[in-house]
Image 1 (tube, rainbow, N blue to C red):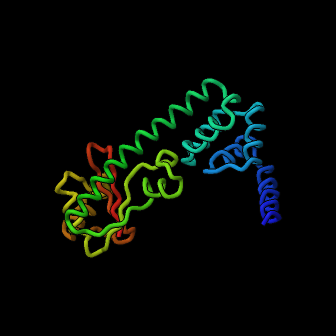
Image 2 (spheres, one colour):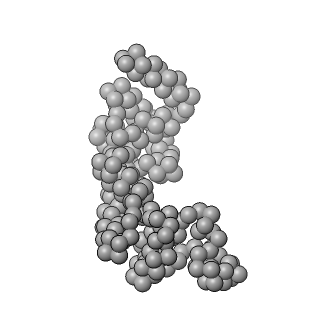
Image 3 (cartoon, rainbow, N blue to C red):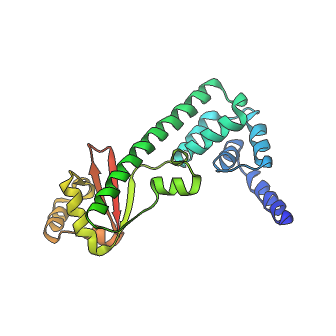
Length: 212
């Protein structure tokens, strides 16, 4: 086991050496748990002159800013420029607030499904963050994902319509002809292909992807 871990670290070193310092830092800091070796590497990289704005941009584009912010603050805060500390704290806090809000909405939706005898599974989003990271603030997500049985699709759709949900795709993406097809057939071809039905709630502050 020890030799395997050493081999894995050697392989990781070879991979990392092919990337810029900024990319190496992203790969190291976007982990739930850092080994002592990883922590040392993070501290060495952050003690050097690097393009911090690129690090921030990379973390945002790969949706790992919460983990990067947490790990950099935890293991090398003294190496961070003051403006970068501020950005990381702001980004982490903003994501945490949004996640708490979406988690609250998820609980309300789950209760609604329970009350109407619709079986469901929560996945991605808050449920994945909680199960993988043990903390919903460590993952970036922008919507709520629910999986149900196909037989309950129309029932669930009508239920969400009744609570003010809007059909996001038919409103924003479909052509007039496609909208007409949707209205006439109840479920548009798009949803059959992708097995996803997206609802928009509360003035576009909540998006729900209903899967089957």
